[in-house]
Length: 299
Image (tube, rainbow, N blue to C red):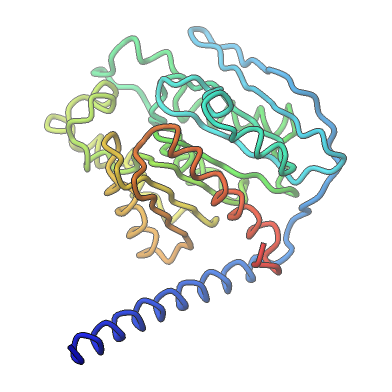
C-alpha cells in the first residue's frame, strides 16, 4: 500500500512538472512577441458582401464589421468542405463572439475546395470549378489586402479553419510569410496519406495507390511546415469519426520537430460537428488575447 502511494505521488509530481514546463515555454514564447503590432485601431466598416467574378464559380466574401469605435483586427474564417460559409454564424455563435470581442470577421465561400496546387486529369470534372490555391494566393489574398484593405500587416490578422478549411488555413499560412498573426486549426486534414481511402482527396488527386507522388508531394502540407512562422493553435475532438485525431497528432509532432510554437487542445466527448466548433470559442479567443497582449498572459 505504501509503495502504491509513493508511486502515485511520483506520477502526480511528474505530471505537474511537465505542465509547469509547458506553461513556462508558452509564457516565454508569447513574451518574445512583444508589442509588435497595433492592437487597437480605428476602422469603421459596414457589413457587406464582395464578389470576385470567375468563369464558372464566383467567390463571395462576407464581411461582418465590428461596430466598436476601436477594432482589434480581422479574423478570416474558412469553412468545411461543401458547408455553407455562413455555418460559422448560423450553427454556432462564433461570429457574434468575435464581433463582440472587437474583431472584423471575413468569410469567403470556397465551396468544395481542397486547397490543391493544381488540377489533374483524374480530377472529377464537377470539382474543377472550385477555387484552389493559385486563385486563393494570387487573387483572393490580394483582393483582401489591396482592394478591401482589411488585411493589413500593421494590424492583427487571424487565420482560422475548420475541417477542410483547417487544411486551407495551414496551406495559406505556409505561403503568406507573416501576413497573419496566428493560425487556428480545428479538426483538419493535413497529411492525406493518413487517410488513403478518403473519397474527397481521391476525387481530386486520383487514388493513392496509383498516384502516391501527388498524395505525398507538395500538396501534403506536412512537407512545408518549415514555412510556418506564426503561433499555431491545434484543436480536435477525441471522438471525431470523420477526421481522426491522428491528423492533429502528426501535425503537432512535425511542428515540434521543426521547433515551431504550437498549443494543442483536445476535447473529450466531442466529435466533428458544430458542437465541437462551439466548444472551441473560448480557447480561441484566449489564444488571440495572448498574441495581442503578450505582456499580460493572465487574460
